[in-house]
Image (cartoon, rainbow, N blue to C red):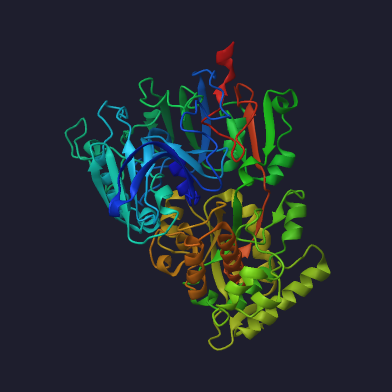
Length: 616
């Protein structure tokens, strides 16, 4: 579902061109109102108003069978609105959004709950016209009041949504089936698009009573089967252990062109496991149908069992999702802690990280070092700044490190004893400049005598394997780094409240970064619990560049501002860049399959996949 992209940090952004549906009505300030069937980000929408289906689906795919998936940890909450508890996976399947993305386009979106969208030239508002046939699972119609209720509650109860939609000043009903979002600033080209991308909730259900006569409360966690308007409904629930979603035969939108050939499994279930090794063994045993493999070493060494050899389990390494996706995976020091405030300390931490040795010994050479916050895309900075990018940086020269203009960003290179010794020597030198010194085998503060000591917070034991070598390297220069692995519920709560010294985290970037950049590294989000500003960045230069990205008048200006911001983030050593493979490694039992042609920018899982056995 489109709204889950938002949870992963991928915003649907910048609506620059449109396609007309029909009708001309009065608009604010006398401007003619154009109704559009979709919003395109780069270039034109690929599909006309009368398109019959998405180009990558199999409209003859059977609607049958089951899909069994694994999850790690546990869950204790089915209310996606609030920032409490451990949320269950898969809830996106029960909700519809106003618009839906085509995975063949770089964020081209088309009407789902809304049949059309309209906005003025200055992007000061966006109006959506709902489909008259849109219904909740209990048969009641989806109304503008549901949309208003959803936005208001998400902004009120979710730190993430309140930050992301902070420029939505109001939402109001402007017609029998029309709802209008008004923004507190003009010419923010992203806003009409992203307000089409949040889950729409049933107001009457949340304000009603349950089967026991108890009043529901959207501000609290729940393990009850929540209701939506989407293709699936919640079936069986075993709290903390498993959940099953069931395909709705009465789904109102099943015959829409945007939905044909999708939502093909009769049931989709998630079983929760204690760690990734246990989940992998369940997959090997055939009780789990599909696995996304995030361990390069396991991919290289553990997929040699009989079912793989005889073809019953298929493996694919797909690059589709990374054609328009930038990734920064990193160790993230929390600058809300005093020990990380000095950039020399943070730079020293990078010199202590030996990626080359880890890649060789643990990942069999299957990884690449990340060197940009937009790694793998055309948005990544490289070399020295030139042209418009240089001009933007020169405007900020009193606010950014001089090295931005004189030194291309590069990560330290290790992999052999001489290079490692040189890197550790540089790390010790940087720490000395920052007021730390080696006394015996401990790195201590020169003034207070306190040791340089911190904890690396992890969410699962599988991550420990790649963190242990880093901890050992830090100890060589007297830094007391410790691994702390906690259960998913505790991890989520600690991250939301910024209660950590260092994280192992990842940000995913779209090809059109926008308002979400404030959530990642803007000063406005540094103190807002639940934001994704994990590093605690409050940098005036970064704030200025974020605004230039959001309000860029054209693509060239936007790209220049993105690369300039990338350079400033890198030069301040806000994170210790780690690695990524650049491939989506998946394995699945041959009972399930996907269409011959996958989407250009995704793999369409699970929406366009299906159960082959139903064909027999």
